[in-house]
Image (tube, rainbow, N blue to C red):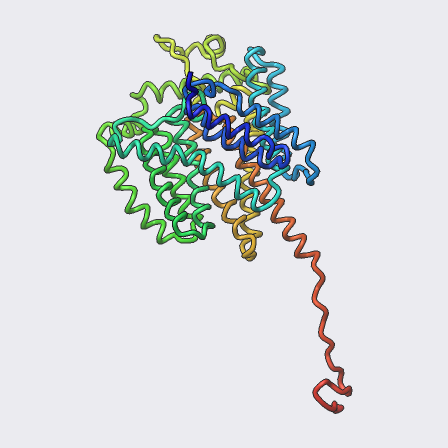
Amino acid sequence: MDLPLRDLLVTMAVFGSLPFIFLRPYIGILMWSWIGYMNPHRLTWSFAYNFPFAQVIGLATLASLFLSREPKRIPWNGVSVLLVALSLWMVVTTLFALYPGSAWDHLARVLKILLMAFVTMMVMNHPERVKSLVWVIAISLGFYGIKGGLFALRTGGEHAVIGPAQTFIGGNTALALAMIMVLPLLRFLHLHTERQWLRWGLVAAMVLTGLAIIASYSRGAFLAAACMLAFLWLKSRYKGALALAFLLLLPVGLGFMPQKYFDKMETILHYQQDDSAQGRLDAWTFATKMALARPLVGGGFESFVPQSYHRFAPDVIRENERYQDAHSIWFEMLGEHGFVGLGLFLATGLVGWRTATRVIQRTRERPELKWAGDLAAMVQVSLVGYATAGTFLGLAYFDFYYHLLAILVILQDQVAQAEGKTTAQPAPAATPQPQPGLASSGGAGHAP
């Protein structure tokens, strides 16, 4: 029987990379990011579809981490310390979880994401490695932006753009969130790419990704995109050109969509009459009541289930007994990990934001570090998109968010190292100045 070509290509790419991963652990991070964000195995139809490629790459990367002789360390700052605290607190809440069997399984998946974020901090310790990581993330998620934009053009926006099944970005809203977060990274690459053809390619990718976000039919994405674009404009070095591009392209993109798109967006103003919006409000009410009943540890992972609804918030159960998931990163953390977990999650994001601001400030007068300042600014724009769209979507454990925080930790460390090298350089020897009454190199001196 002939083996499917896609399955063979993905398998060959992963297993062909293993020797290089054993030699250089940072290659493992690049491959893990490609598998994790693009999910190429979910675009196959045979044996590769469910093969644990991420596990294979992760184990190879960890083995290489211990075998490699290159320097490795975790840059400790407020973000990395808070990520450790959040990880430990999730272990605590799992010990007291309402449903420990499913909670421990979920904890294992989340801790793998956080572990790879820390490995990223350890091995992506060079400017070129950081830029390579941004390229891999941008290409992996930008693929769906380009694909979705072309799909919208071909179908006239009649069908919603969705992501690959059984992944973090499988639904239309989840994919839209990922595309909103990756748009600023595409902009960063556009700013720091010299090849003209590649710059135009990145422009096309941004335009098609923007169209794909619109064609996702996600109301949360619509609001998040508006906030993200406004902040992107504030962070841009070329505000006039960017504003002109928005004014020209946004009406074209919206004008391309059919009437049913605008009918759905209009429900934002009339959320009281929309079952989906009301379901979100019910889920948020339930999360709050469960957290008030268990304020320290919440319900633990996998606690947004019918049994918990009946126990903590029977008043929000409707006649059809539809039980909503969290549908919000904030209420997901509150319900599953209590007020302490929500506080740590908020603190991590706020300290990450402040870290980006410090990087921007410290690189403003350093042309050789301009790339770090620009990347930090674009990560901030991505965080705005995550916080806004995440208000309506339960992706509190999205690996992209934790990877962005890891990038900020690395950027701060890179800037500190560059400043340390500058400080350590010896000052140039002072040129001896002629003293009064002594001869100078040009002729006889005269006393005043």
